[in-house]
Length: 360
Image 1: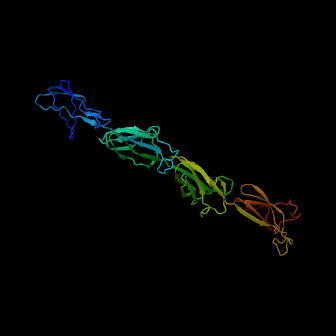
Image 2: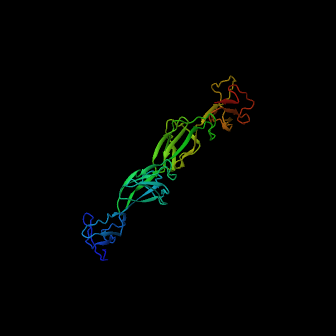
Image 3: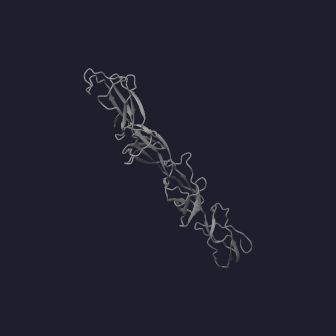
């Protein structure tokens, strides 16, 4: 618009330059933001619009440089990869309020927090843009490792466009532990002196269905690093260090424990009891010489009261051969012949053995 108020429209050439012939005097230039070649969403970083220049007769007067800036947008997403498989499965939570430091192509930085959906968005100049997750942020999961995406990561921001950086999956493993021991007396708890079970394999099946085999240490303890969630442990009864013939008196096998991210969860104590067997023999010492001679009969159906190392009692009858057998916990076991049993020979005295008698 020249000093007479007349207007003309001039297009910039291949070099971004324009020239207008005007009467001398105050001349105003306006960039046409509706021109299809004008960059959508641009802001002016150099010059003013409109700008007024005093045109001088017979001379070529420079107005100004006009710099137009079109910002770019980048965005990304953070989530908790609960099972550590490198993808966000159904139910795996988004990570809200975690700071991401964005360094743009000019080297300027800004800090953006993820929203309730784990998303962040930053307006930057076009060009290579680097994002760093702030691991010191209190909302960043302690002890996490990254299973999807990289940190830092560089994305080429495109002017006037919204460019996705990546999904960042953060995995926080859990730890489970347990204990195995020999329940010598079979009472369902580890008493003083009852030994730990070392070198026994435990098969751990995690919440993803993956298995690992862990051996108990010298103290009978085992520890496994697993994804959070339901974790099943099985004692390997085929392990050569597993006590042959054992039954479990404390704990269950298999057992399922909910492993908690970033925590060490105790499964249980597993007490394994290996029973003992005692046996004895009763006979009639017809000649009273303290030994069973040929022809001297066995004593059948005579009750023997067995008191085990826990103080529990059971009554066992001799069989047709005069023998009795009792299953008991290991330890000092006392046997008493029941002299009130109707099959006990009335008026008998003992010529071999003692009554009561204690056997280990």
